[in-house]
Each structure stands twice: as C-alpha cells, then as structure tokens.
Image (cartoon, rainbow, N blue to C red; front, side):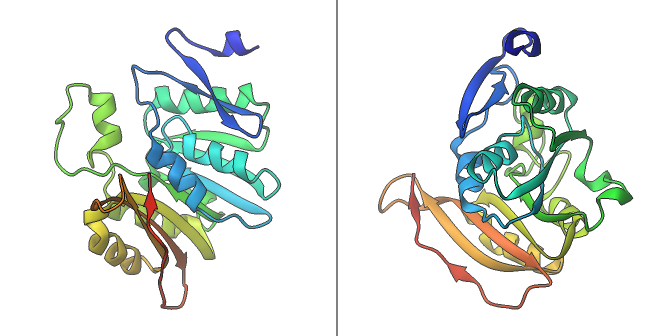
Length: 226
C-alpha cells in the first residue's frame, strides 16, 4: 500500500507515534519550525483541529502524533494542489479516517468551517515581497504572495469557536506585528516563546498562542535553543 501511495521522487519520513508523512524534495520539505510549532501548541480533549497553510500536513499530522487521544478531527487546508494531495495521501498511508485535506485558500473557506474548530495551527509564509525564489511553488510557501499574516489571522478568527486557540509561528522580528494583528482579529495573545539558534544569539523565530475572545494577559515562556 505504501508504494501505491507514493509518486515519483517522494519519500516517507517517520513522525513518531507510529505515524508517517510523505515528502517531496522538489516541492517544499518541512523545517524544524513546523516541528517546534506542533510541540508548542497545547492539546485539549476532543479538539477539532485545523492546520492552515498546511503544506504537506506536517504541523497537523505531527500534532496528531503527539496527542492521538485528544484530537477528534484534523483538517489540513493548503492552497497548492500538489501539496494538498500529498497530505491526503499521508492520511491514507496512516489509515486516518479523522483527517481530511482541503485544497484552497484559507481566506475562501466556506460556511461549514465558520466556528468549526477549537484549535487552528498555522505556519504561514514569513517573508514579504514578491517571487524572490526561482521556483514559484516554493516561493508561495515562503513569501506572503497568496496569503498575508493578517488574512491568515482573520481566517483563523472566523474558523475558531469562541474560546478556541490559534497557535502560529513567524519571524521573531515581526513580534509587534503578530501581536497587533491577533488583537485586531479578536484573538488575545496568551503565550509567546522565542527560539534562538544558539545560546546568546538573537531570536530568529517566535511561537505565539492566542485565544478568541480571551482576557488580556500574555505569558512569556523561556526561550528555546534549537
């Protein structure tokens, strides 16, 4: 079955917890940022989870591998059809009947997704600007071409139930913009954590969790050295 689900040039990587994910080096392989985000996000029993800007599904699938007893359902939302198809085949590879892949822009999600989730995970494009990469498919993953931070946060706010959580990552130097954007969308920042490449170095990544309709008050967690 594994061979039948793989396309030319694809590989299968272990996620832990018995789960696997299909990857393709010619598209966009996941980085440590995705793993850090899935570990940062907190699970609650009965969670209905969405992974926005899902790519091959790494954040959502790894979160599921970490919390198999808590996740009731997982929806992987990805714009690029090749990556979305790959995430659907990863779900099939693992026999996950509670995981579905949705191909499309998070801004365009229909009414069935309004206030449908208790948790949204999002590893959005970090960079502003145009097609700096020669490969358009990789540029869409890295650059705010098809979705901006504001659009992703607004889509998450629509998709979350009241009291639902959004966990995302972004560049550390965009901290003020991230926190302002979440508050503008009605998502109160509750936890922030920075990631450094080595001890004493400036942070390069931020992890943030917000609650839709939450009360003010933000916990700053100890930095991670990755």
